[in-house]
Amino acid sequence: MKRILTLLFILLLALPGFSQTNPNWEYYRTMRWKAKTGQADDFKKAAAKKTQMFNNSPENAIVTYQIMTGSDQGMFERVQVARTLDNLYNADNTKELEYWAKNVTQFAENPEGGKIWWRIKGWSANWEEGGTPSKYMDVQIITIKTANTSDFRRYMTRRMDIIKENSTRKIAVFKISSGGQLGEFRIITFFDDPMKAMGEWKSEDFDFEDAYNEKYGFNAYMTDRDLYTKAFEIYGNLVETHKLVPEMSFMGN
Image (cartoon, rainbow, N blue to C red; front, side, top):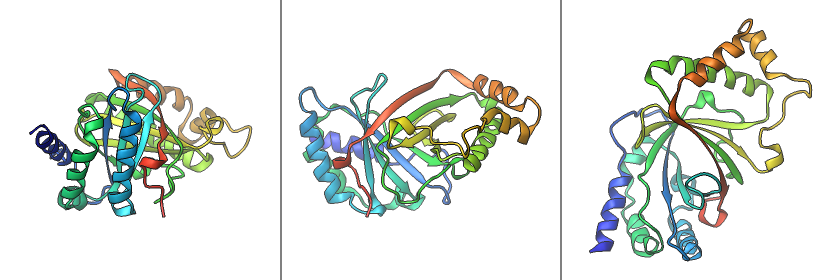
């Protein structure tokens, strides 16, 4: 009975909510798992086997990161990547979920609720379609006040334009679609070498603030940046570092 209830719980989490959807968006589903005390290796082995069996192509890919910092340190975040709206609603993953419930959940605590995100393509820089997962991610999770959305969007649009034109930094922004606060975003920097996490500017003497002001007007950076930070909810600014778990991930063709 417990196993059946667990399966039903997972199935419910797998269904996207009716909040913010668009057939042209690219979706990502995240879920966080905590291994039972002393059973982290068992959880990793069981999840790795399931990944190899069911998540071994771009169409059904899952990547897994272990959270290294913050209140969720040690937990595993499983990410279903680059799904279409049709895939979210109509894919038949019954056997996959049954296998997970039968063979993996015995080594884990109850998971946190799943979340569905869509990638804002205009706010992505140096993004590689179908590329190999990066070894690390710095994940900034923020929640924006409804009344200040335009301030947030103005700074992010301008910031990302300059990064795309002048930096090798690999960064993407994801907006919540279901499972969280409507103003929730994830700003993620991907990197393999911690010493080069922020990438490199096109020249050694490049100055972001000067470039921003030159493009958008006198003192635009300080004005926009101040309004941007005031747009955050009081509780809504968290940063975590995640490390890739290759054996639990689809690593590309």
